[in-house]
Image 1 (cartoon, each protein chain N blue to C red):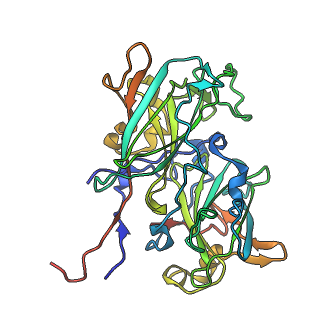
Image 2: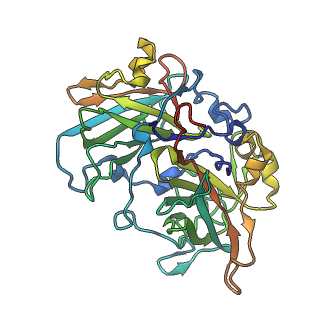
Image 3: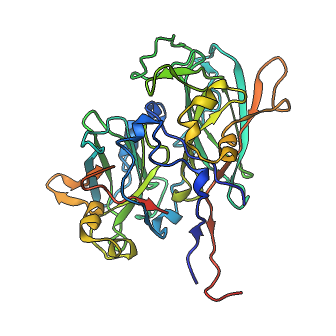
Length: 159
Length: 233
């Protein structure tokens, strides 16, 4: 078995590979019920991360040439991110999430859920920890804040 | 029948979240232990069509004009941890120019920008996992982690493999770089052999006469593995 290549930080200048359009997964013309997901990413001091990369992968609705289920967003000057996408199927209402940033030598893996479906992961978490993976419905769409460290620290996964 | 899983990562092959010598980790590393999760949606992953994510295999020119610096060819093979080739993997690349300056508005290093160098590329592996691109050797640059801190020459790699959990972001280094021994990011990897695998190898076979030096850099991603049935022998 070959050793898996070591991870290194994405650094502060990763935006060179990015395109703001990648935060809109409907940009190619996919149709269906839409979902907006936005939030703020904060560090152990509660300070916003202004140079982070957040990526989502959703397995549903099924991929097509108009929808590949992947999105990427750079956090803005206030630590904010925002995705526009298609709502996932009700049977599996969650996205896989990966966070990369300066100061993260390896990615933070997590998930964002749009309902407490009591799957193996959510069921194994204490309520306060479980809540960190549940997006909240607001008038503007869904809100999901991410805390890398400290009070209300988001649950991060070992896949 | 059980679902395929990722093999555990060798703990010393990957850097920790909290690395004392790398200041930016101090407030960004989680304090809670990671929660073990059986992959579900993570066993699949996005497919990137070259028609929508066009390849850019030559970073050494911009608008038909040659960038300043040592021209290089980088090539290698992407496999999974069972040695299987990873076909059609999308690899994103970005790097500083020969003077050690990124074409990025937040890079304030007092070194010249090169109008003929942007420093962002994208390649896809072929059916055997092989990739190749042309660029110029990036320069070292200072950063403010500690007094007189300089990053070794490096090219950033971002890879999408056959599943979401195979996603990898890393950096390729160059052989013989004296800054590697004192770089907190490179040195954050505990296992010296794993560190060494991030250093590309000069390759005379890949080197093109009168044109460019060749460097080889192979990459291993996590793969999904069937688990034996309970009680099977």
